[in-house]
Image (cartoon, rainbow, N blue to C red; front, side, top):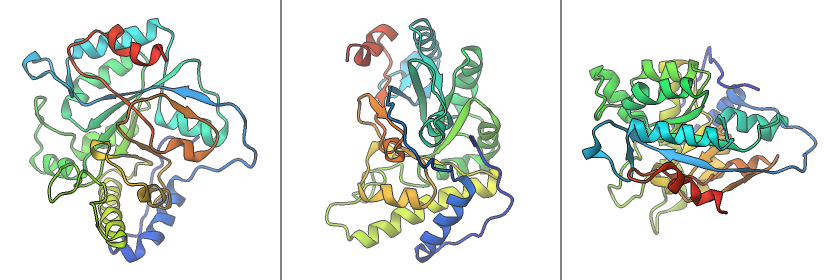
Length: 290
């Protein structure tokens, strides 16, 4: 199963009028063959959502955990018999019937904080774990220009994103190009109340394509996973993402996912946000008691 696919050439199309054509291109680049027969088995999958990882406990909170808390989580899950899988493993299960291990769990890290490079990647190696790291294109552009390496409040540069694509333990998610804000009355990439549907589709498509093109031109790869900023989504966007070659999308609602061999089961996947200040046992009991 293809994990990440090197792209040697791409046609750059800017206007949303060419959205469908560009979607066909991305589909060609990252397409996964669909089997003609569907198996009956369904897998229950919990997904953990992390963001920033910092040693300074004064900054810990709802979206910031310490390296110690993250490591305790990995230890806990390992001792409880969970198996860490990647987004690529999940896509292979759905499209190719590739078996998943017993008690699979998926780790995700949003926003592309540079501290993920410093703290998360070594722990993935140490605990034989995998993760999806979702980047915001605009942040990556800005920090690539400055070449800043700030563990406290920096973001991945494109050279770092290339390393993520090359790392067998990480998948890269598209976290939008510039929707990671609540400005102008829009919540992330969600459609505004009363917004014209075609206008919204144009705006969403243009932002998504820009992030894909930047990633493609800077690293030679493009994501097949879309992570909604703030988990705010509109139902109309799933079809757009499919046309653009995406195989999976992530939101922020909590709950266990039921993954079948239907590709639709990979979209709008729920996740449990991991805050600081509680033990691993107290956090993971959320789904273990379900």
